[in-house]
Image 1: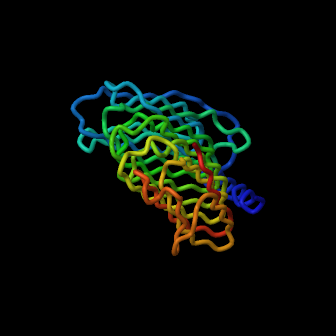
Image 2: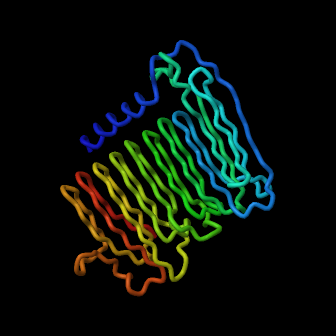
Amino acid sequence: MRAAHLAKQAATALAVSVLTAAGLTAQDMRLSSASRQRGAEPDINVHVRFGVGRFQLKPGREDALYRARLQYDAEAFEPIMRYDPLARRMTMGIEGLNRHGRGWDRDNPPEQWLNVELSPAVPADLELEFGAGTADVELGGLSVRRAHIKVGAAESVIRFSEPNRVTCEALTFEAGAIDLKTEHLGNARCGRIEFKGAAGDITLDLTGAWPENSVTELDVTSALSAVTLLLPERLGVSVEMDRFLASFDRAGLRKRGNRYYSASYDTASAKLNVDVKTGIGSVEVRWVR
Protein backbone atom coordinates (compact mmCIF):
# COMPACT_ATOMS: atom_id res chain seq x y z
CA MET A 1 0.00 0.00 0.00
CA ARG A 2 1.74 3.20 -1.20
CA ALA A 3 0.56 5.48 1.62
CA ALA A 4 1.75 3.05 4.27
CA HIS A 5 5.06 2.60 2.43
CA LEU A 6 5.69 6.36 2.28
CA ALA A 7 4.76 6.79 5.92
CA LYS A 8 7.09 3.98 6.87
CA GLN A 9 9.97 5.56 4.93
CA ALA A 10 9.38 8.91 6.59
CA ALA A 11 9.22 7.42 10.08
CA THR A 12 12.36 5.37 9.44
CA ALA A 13 14.23 8.50 8.39
CA LEU A 14 13.00 10.27 11.51
CA ALA A 15 14.12 7.40 13.76
CA VAL A 16 17.55 7.47 12.14
CA SER A 17 17.87 11.26 12.40
CA VAL A 18 17.00 11.18 16.09
CA LEU A 19 19.79 8.68 16.70
CA THR A 20 22.41 10.41 14.53
CA ALA A 21 24.40 13.57 14.44
CA ALA A 22 27.14 14.26 11.90
CA GLY A 23 28.64 11.26 10.12
CA LEU A 24 31.67 9.46 11.49
CA THR A 25 34.80 8.80 9.52
CA ALA A 26 35.78 5.77 11.58
CA GLN A 27 34.30 3.20 13.93
CA ASP A 28 35.81 1.69 17.05
CA MET A 29 34.08 -1.66 17.46
CA ARG A 30 34.36 -3.25 20.90
CA LEU A 31 32.90 -6.22 22.75
CA SER A 32 31.16 -6.32 26.11
CA SER A 33 29.56 -9.22 27.95
CA ALA A 34 27.71 -9.98 31.16
CA SER A 35 26.35 -13.11 32.81
CA ARG A 36 25.03 -14.30 36.14
CA GLN A 37 24.46 -17.75 37.53
CA ARG A 38 20.96 -18.54 38.66
CA GLY A 39 20.46 -18.50 42.41
CA ALA A 40 17.25 -18.35 44.41
CA GLU A 41 15.74 -15.50 42.40
CA PRO A 42 11.93 -15.84 42.30
CA ASP A 43 11.80 -13.72 39.15
CA ILE A 44 13.71 -11.20 37.03
CA ASN A 45 12.95 -7.89 35.32
CA VAL A 46 14.76 -7.40 32.01
CA HIS A 47 14.99 -4.02 30.27
CA VAL A 48 16.71 -3.88 26.88
CA ARG A 49 17.33 -0.56 25.12
CA PHE A 50 19.08 -1.04 21.76
CA GLY A 51 18.96 1.90 19.37
CA VAL A 52 20.62 0.54 16.25
CA GLY A 53 21.90 -2.85 15.15
CA ARG A 54 20.93 -6.52 15.25
CA PHE A 55 19.18 -7.80 18.37
CA GLN A 56 18.52 -11.41 19.30
CA LEU A 57 16.88 -12.86 22.40
CA LYS A 58 16.32 -16.56 23.09
CA PRO A 59 16.14 -19.11 25.92
CA GLY A 60 19.47 -20.11 27.44
CA ARG A 61 20.57 -22.61 30.07
CA GLU A 62 18.36 -23.02 33.11
CA ASP A 63 21.31 -22.52 35.49
CA ALA A 64 22.28 -19.15 33.95
CA LEU A 65 19.98 -16.29 34.98
CA TYR A 66 21.12 -14.33 31.94
CA ARG A 67 23.95 -14.13 29.44
CA ALA A 68 24.54 -11.17 27.14
CA ARG A 69 27.16 -10.34 24.50
CA LEU A 70 27.34 -6.94 22.85
CA GLN A 71 29.36 -5.50 19.98
CA TYR A 72 29.16 -1.71 19.79
CA ASP A 73 30.81 1.34 18.24
CA ALA A 74 32.68 3.03 21.08
CA GLU A 75 32.99 6.25 19.06
CA ALA A 76 29.25 6.82 19.23
CA PHE A 77 27.84 4.62 22.01
CA GLU A 78 28.62 3.25 25.42
CA PRO A 79 27.45 -0.16 26.68
CA ILE A 80 24.81 -0.64 29.34
CA MET A 81 25.16 -3.78 31.46
CA ARG A 82 23.70 -3.29 34.93
CA TYR A 83 22.13 -5.76 37.34
CA ASP A 84 20.40 -4.70 40.56
CA PRO A 85 20.21 -7.81 42.78
CA LEU A 86 17.73 -6.22 45.20
CA ALA A 87 15.26 -5.27 42.48
CA ARG A 88 16.28 -8.32 40.42
CA ARG A 89 16.47 -5.99 37.41
CA MET A 90 18.85 -6.37 34.47
CA THR A 91 19.33 -3.37 32.16
CA MET A 92 21.30 -3.84 28.97
CA GLY A 93 21.88 -2.20 25.61
CA ILE A 94 23.63 0.92 24.34
CA GLU A 95 23.43 4.64 25.01
CA GLY A 96 24.50 7.47 22.69
CA LEU A 97 27.49 9.51 23.87
CA ASN A 98 25.99 12.75 22.49
CA ARG A 99 29.39 14.17 21.68
CA HIS A 100 29.19 17.49 19.87
CA GLY A 101 29.23 16.92 16.13
CA ARG A 102 29.59 13.15 16.38
CA GLY A 103 27.19 10.26 15.87
CA TRP A 104 26.90 7.28 13.57
CA ASP A 105 26.77 7.56 9.80
CA ARG A 106 23.42 6.48 8.37
CA ASP A 107 25.19 5.52 5.12
CA ASN A 108 27.69 3.40 7.03
CA PRO A 109 25.85 2.06 10.09
CA PRO A 110 27.94 0.32 12.74
CA GLU A 111 28.03 -3.47 12.82
CA GLN A 112 26.48 -3.54 16.24
CA TRP A 113 24.70 -6.51 17.73
CA LEU A 114 23.31 -7.66 21.06
CA ASN A 115 22.63 -11.32 21.85
CA VAL A 116 20.73 -12.13 25.05
CA GLU A 117 19.90 -15.49 26.64
CA LEU A 118 17.57 -15.86 29.63
CA SER A 119 16.94 -18.77 31.95
CA PRO A 120 13.71 -20.57 31.00
CA ALA A 121 13.18 -21.51 34.65
CA VAL A 122 12.84 -17.98 36.08
CA PRO A 123 9.61 -15.96 35.57
CA ALA A 124 10.46 -12.79 33.67
CA ASP A 125 8.96 -9.36 33.09
CA LEU A 126 10.35 -7.96 29.83
CA GLU A 127 10.72 -4.40 28.51
CA LEU A 128 12.30 -4.50 25.06
CA GLU A 129 12.99 -1.34 23.03
CA PHE A 130 14.54 -1.41 19.54
CA GLY A 131 15.33 1.45 17.21
CA ALA A 132 16.75 0.97 13.71
CA GLY A 133 17.96 -2.45 12.55
CA THR A 134 16.59 -5.96 12.99
CA ALA A 135 15.22 -7.92 15.92
CA ASP A 136 14.74 -11.69 16.28
CA VAL A 137 13.02 -12.49 19.57
CA GLU A 138 12.26 -16.07 20.60
CA LEU A 139 10.10 -16.14 23.73
CA GLY A 140 8.93 -19.73 23.35
CA GLY A 141 9.99 -21.97 26.22
CA LEU A 142 10.69 -19.04 28.54
CA SER A 143 8.64 -18.10 31.62
CA VAL A 144 7.19 -14.78 30.47
CA ARG A 145 4.80 -13.13 32.95
CA ARG A 146 4.56 -9.79 31.15
CA ALA A 147 6.22 -8.34 28.06
CA HIS A 148 6.21 -4.83 26.61
CA ILE A 149 7.91 -4.70 23.22
CA LYS A 150 8.49 -1.29 21.62
CA VAL A 151 9.87 -1.18 18.09
CA GLY A 152 10.83 1.99 16.21
CA ALA A 153 12.09 1.30 12.70
CA ALA A 154 13.41 -2.23 13.08
CA GLU A 155 12.31 -5.20 11.00
CA SER A 156 11.20 -7.57 13.71
CA VAL A 157 10.11 -11.15 14.28
CA ILE A 158 8.61 -12.04 17.66
CA ARG A 159 7.82 -15.71 18.17
CA PHE A 160 6.64 -18.27 20.71
CA SER A 161 7.83 -21.47 19.03
CA GLU A 162 7.01 -23.41 22.21
CA PRO A 163 4.39 -22.81 24.91
CA ASN A 164 5.16 -20.27 27.59
CA ARG A 165 6.05 -22.03 30.84
CA VAL A 166 3.84 -19.75 32.94
CA THR A 167 0.60 -17.86 32.49
CA CYS A 168 1.22 -14.47 30.90
CA GLU A 169 -0.77 -11.51 32.19
CA ALA A 170 -0.16 -9.10 29.31
CA LEU A 171 1.76 -8.95 26.04
CA THR A 172 2.03 -5.47 24.50
CA PHE A 173 3.49 -4.37 21.17
CA GLU A 174 4.14 -0.75 20.21
CA ALA A 175 5.36 -0.34 16.65
CA GLY A 176 6.47 2.60 14.54
CA ALA A 177 7.24 2.32 10.85
CA ILE A 178 8.08 -1.34 10.61
CA ASP A 179 7.28 -4.68 9.11
CA LEU A 180 6.41 -6.71 12.18
CA LYS A 181 5.85 -10.44 12.09
CA THR A 182 4.75 -12.56 15.01
CA GLU A 183 4.62 -16.35 15.16
CA HIS A 184 2.49 -18.67 17.33
CA LEU A 185 1.10 -16.14 19.80
CA GLY A 186 -1.31 -18.87 20.89
CA ASN A 187 1.64 -20.36 22.77
CA ALA A 188 2.04 -17.17 24.82
CA ARG A 189 -0.75 -18.19 27.26
CA CYS A 190 -1.63 -14.52 27.70
CA GLY A 191 -4.93 -13.22 28.98
CA ARG A 192 -4.45 -9.94 27.15
CA ILE A 193 -2.54 -9.02 23.97
CA GLU A 194 -2.33 -5.44 22.75
CA PHE A 195 -0.90 -4.02 19.54
CA LYS A 196 -0.46 -0.32 18.71
CA GLY A 197 1.02 0.50 15.31
CA ALA A 198 1.67 3.46 13.05
CA ALA A 199 2.52 2.20 9.56
CA GLY A 200 3.75 -1.01 7.98
CA ASP A 201 2.82 -4.59 7.24
CA ILE A 202 1.78 -6.34 10.45
CA THR A 203 1.24 -10.09 10.77
CA LEU A 204 -0.27 -11.35 14.02
CA ASP A 205 -0.03 -15.13 13.97
CA LEU A 206 -2.41 -16.44 16.64
CA THR A 207 -1.71 -20.13 16.06
CA GLY A 208 -0.31 -22.32 18.82
CA ALA A 209 -1.39 -24.47 21.76
CA TRP A 210 -4.22 -22.42 23.22
CA PRO A 211 -5.03 -23.40 26.83
CA GLU A 212 -8.35 -25.15 27.40
CA ASN A 213 -11.20 -23.02 28.77
CA SER A 214 -9.27 -19.81 28.14
CA VAL A 215 -10.49 -16.39 27.01
CA THR A 216 -7.98 -13.93 25.55
CA GLU A 217 -8.57 -10.27 24.69
CA LEU A 218 -6.71 -8.85 21.68
CA ASP A 219 -6.76 -5.08 21.08
CA VAL A 220 -5.39 -3.83 17.74
CA THR A 221 -4.96 -0.10 17.11
CA SER A 222 -3.33 1.07 13.89
CA ALA A 223 -3.21 4.31 11.94
CA LEU A 224 -1.87 3.30 8.55
CA SER A 225 -1.13 -0.42 8.52
CA ALA A 226 -1.96 -3.57 6.63
CA VAL A 227 -2.85 -6.01 9.42
CA THR A 228 -3.17 -9.75 8.83
CA LEU A 229 -4.66 -12.02 11.51
CA LEU A 230 -3.72 -15.70 11.21
CA LEU A 231 -6.28 -17.68 13.21
CA PRO A 232 -6.44 -21.43 13.96
CA GLU A 233 -9.71 -23.00 12.81
CA ARG A 234 -10.44 -24.59 16.19
CA LEU A 235 -10.29 -21.24 18.00
CA GLY A 236 -13.53 -19.44 18.81
CA VAL A 237 -13.10 -15.90 17.48
CA SER A 238 -15.14 -12.72 17.75
CA VAL A 239 -14.15 -9.40 16.16
CA GLU A 240 -15.43 -5.86 16.62
CA MET A 241 -14.32 -3.28 14.04
CA ASP A 242 -14.02 0.48 14.52
CA ARG A 243 -12.62 1.74 11.22
CA PHE A 244 -12.41 4.90 9.15
CA LEU A 245 -11.33 4.07 5.60
CA ALA A 246 -9.85 0.65 6.28
CA SER A 247 -11.03 -2.44 4.44
CA PHE A 248 -12.00 -5.59 6.35
CA ASP A 249 -11.77 -9.07 4.86
CA ARG A 250 -13.81 -11.05 7.39
CA ALA A 251 -13.55 -14.51 5.82
CA GLY A 252 -15.47 -17.09 7.86
CA LEU A 253 -17.00 -14.60 10.29
CA ARG A 254 -20.69 -13.77 10.60
CA LYS A 255 -22.12 -10.60 12.12
CA ARG A 256 -24.27 -10.76 15.26
CA GLY A 257 -25.03 -7.38 16.73
CA ASN A 258 -21.89 -5.24 16.73
CA ARG A 259 -19.44 -8.15 16.44
CA TYR A 260 -18.40 -10.78 13.92
CA TYR A 261 -18.23 -14.40 15.12
CA SER A 262 -16.69 -17.62 13.90
CA ALA A 263 -19.09 -20.56 13.51
CA SER A 264 -17.46 -22.42 16.42
CA TYR A 265 -17.35 -19.51 18.86
CA ASP A 266 -20.09 -20.68 21.23
CA THR A 267 -18.73 -24.23 21.56
CA ALA A 268 -14.96 -23.61 21.34
CA SER A 269 -12.90 -24.44 24.42
CA ALA A 270 -10.57 -21.49 23.77
CA LYS A 271 -11.86 -18.07 22.75
CA LEU A 272 -10.23 -14.94 21.34
CA ASN A 273 -12.08 -11.62 21.42
CA VAL A 274 -10.56 -9.08 19.02
CA ASP A 275 -11.22 -5.33 19.08
CA VAL A 276 -9.80 -3.40 16.12
CA LYS A 277 -9.49 0.36 15.75
CA THR A 278 -7.92 1.43 12.48
CA GLY A 279 -7.76 4.44 10.20
CA ILE A 280 -6.50 4.04 6.66
CA GLY A 281 -5.29 0.55 5.90
CA SER A 282 -6.61 -2.98 5.81
CA VAL A 283 -7.46 -5.86 8.11
CA GLU A 284 -7.49 -9.40 6.74
CA VAL A 285 -8.53 -12.63 8.46
CA ARG A 286 -6.89 -15.89 7.38
CA TRP A 287 -7.75 -19.29 8.83
CA VAL A 288 -5.04 -21.87 9.48
CA ARG A 289 -5.64 -25.58 9.94
